[in-house]
Image (cartoon, rainbow, N blue to C red; front, side, top):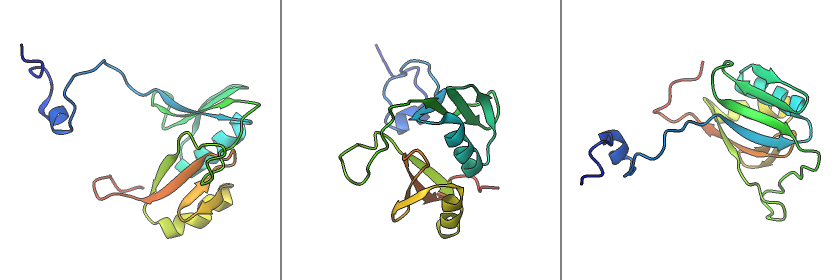
Length: 141
């Protein structure tokens, strides 16, 4: 039995040797003490609207039918202490920009804190990196 017969050549080229289940990312959810505040930060940073807002859960995405970032209230949230491993980062975002140098001041004005190099912390302490748009990605408008 050929287990690869139903797998697209593109998946095989990427090293995927099984079809897996049918799934799609819904949202990346970040714990934080104030979902509305952190959602405002990311809405401005990513130039996307808040598409869902309740007292304990807020979503930022291109529209109300697109996956995006979600923020849920976690009163006991402890911000990561990157680069110190005392409180691990658990995850971070890579935020694509056309010009990293030009974006530095913008993210600080929005409320980010410079940690080191091109690594910042959002207002709730989650690390994120500014990265230059790769050549394969569509230009940012």
